Image 1: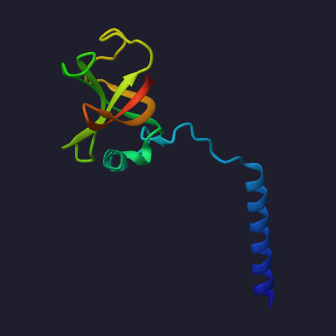
Image 2 (image 1 turned 30 degrees about the horizontal axis):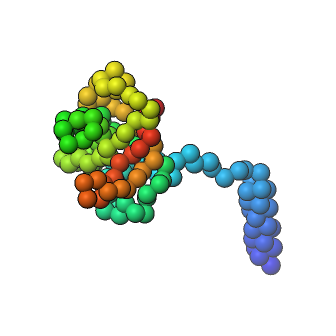
Image 3 (image 1 turned 135 degrees about the vertical axis):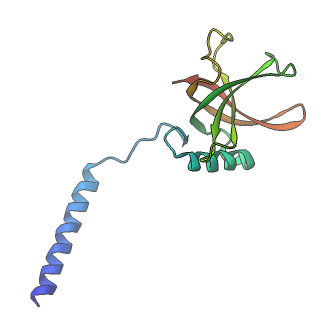
Length: 144
């Protein structure tokens, strides 16, 4: 009888504390729909793979990513260059990433970091058609 009474009192106290704490603590605030900047390399790799294979699920999502800045020369693009934030898998053997387009009218190289430097970039993930093919990029991007 004493054990069951003690167990009931402890249970009641724990419940009261949880109700008190949950009533006072506000839920965490998330600034981005998809924040890849604080995930492990394994989780980032998995999420980026999902975003690239299922882009319709993420279209319009606010995204933040941390990786390596890379520039690719490509004359088929309006400015002749593709800017991207690349991430590596946990074994550092493979990489993938997102093209991003900075907000405003940035000038390369003045408004960009050095090639291969570590960057964090955020913006809106968009899927669209380019030259008749589905394409994804982070638009209205900014550096952190």
